[in-house]
Image (tube, rainbow, N blue to C red; front, side, top):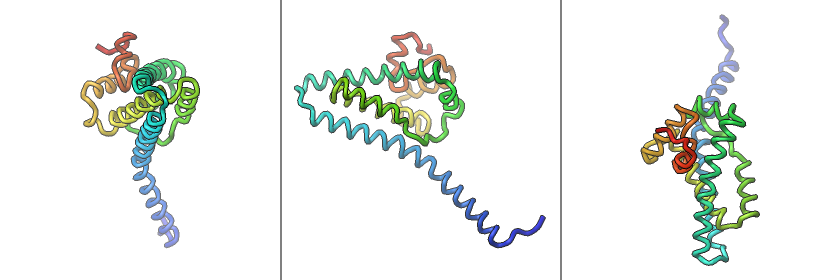
Length: 183
């Protein structure tokens, strides 16, 4: 085998450095995406609540409706869309749950715009706070489990072991209601 010339060695060394920098950025990218979305969702929710012209009690009720609506939408989407209609990409997540997330799902933000146009700011604020909780819970379940309550972590890990059960990520409520809770 011939000895590589100096410029070939430099190119190879530069390529390895670039690769190492890129692989070091992937976890940072995951954190930036999860927490960037989380902080953006919270900021928009706060802005919506501060600018609400509704009575405080009505705003609080609508906010809670938004929280509940998100948890139900999360359950339905996870169970029927990700596991039944489009299981391939989600199956990759089940096979490699620690892989880095490197994209924002623009569809959810489009759905939030539609929700705002249909239901208003207070309901959207509740949905955004619940979405922020979803982002935190899902991130922690795969990358920092010590932060999550043990029961929620077990619920999520059981879902990865038994994919036909425990579809809720942020709550076990809908799994109990629809009988998909692993006993």
